[in-house]
Image 1 (cartoon, rainbow, N blue to C red):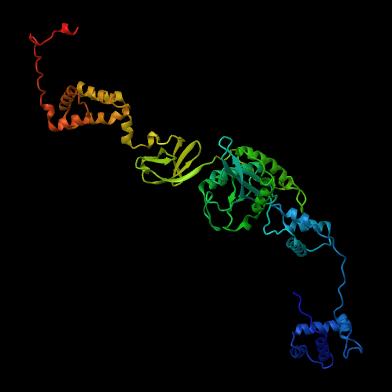
Image 2 (cartoon, rainbow, N blue to C red; image 1 turned 45 degrees about the vertical axis):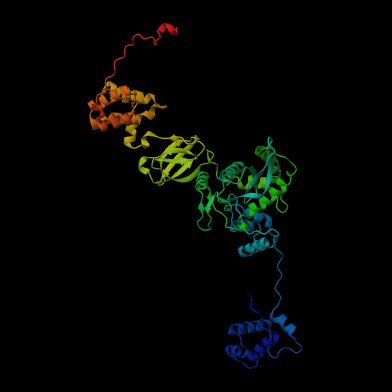
Length: 511
């Protein structure tokens, strides 16, 4: 900051004290309340102008000021800087003002110095009509959000009207915009919209800036947000960083806020009189208008969104991965005591040693995977049969595995080693069940009664049960516990001979 110039009256006093009174600089400084360096400067200017004391007669303050402070020599005006070109170049990710200034001085050797060059550019940015709160480099950020307005979708059969939601994505540098109509604003709609946007752009930026929607950002925080595992997995698949905007801070994603506004004006407003009968039909109409919007020339800058994408951003975007991301949802689950976890009403097995442990379940349209402490412990083919189980043999405890090794033939053969009556009882029990596996448990129960009461008693009890038509596990077990297997059955009475009688009709009567 330039120091303030003293009045000519005070400067005249300095000259008088120095030239007439012969005072020292220190004495003059103390008398006039100024620095000694200031006293020396004014005495030097007077000597350069050839002034003594007393001053020439008739010299007024205006003439004295001209002699002490002659006007500077006016330099020839330098060429005007092309600020639009500088701004366009600065949007490249690898560009700096230092490099642009060196190129400028190569064409204009006596041009502006580096500090003045930077100052003029920043002053120009500050005076522009468009407020540039953020400087977006090519390939750096993609901003995503949903529009507030919706688009009606009419069911062709019932006539019911539902609302389609407009997903919008905008590149920071080129303002290239992608939009599509989705069913809702759930996690699969956010993920699907971003995957389609990256494929439409033809590359991957360094970062994606969403709002703080609950499906994607579990815990909003500017410093350390908690990202939904599915969204984090998608970011790792494509290799970009997720930078959620601050809560209630639309300036953090001003690009997509502007993109949403343009999409509502150029797309939704243009389609307000049309009736759509499906999401796919609406997206076809949106695609046409979106192509027109990206080809529309800028008003204050050269080119259009599509041209800047092709000329500046496409080359610096990262390549898309070979495989398209498949939506995978994550959930926490606790392994039940039957070593299964539930996903959409179907039950999938986990290793039995993880009973009561918490696992992370990752499930796609075709697979279900279980992770324990970031290590995959199980993988299954996805099934949509509610109430059913998908179980791997190796996940069962050893005792359960041995139980599953039993077959009907093996159980019947084992019972036959006790005796034919026991084998017949086991066969009848299995035949009485709607599914043969349902008879395994009572049959094994009957066979194991031989360990408690002996095979001989069990065989007698089975013979008695067959004669009495009570061949069940509970009846046989009760019989052995009460010792009824040792009690012989009562002898059957002999048939009574029918003698002649007047009231007895013969067989001939009934023929």
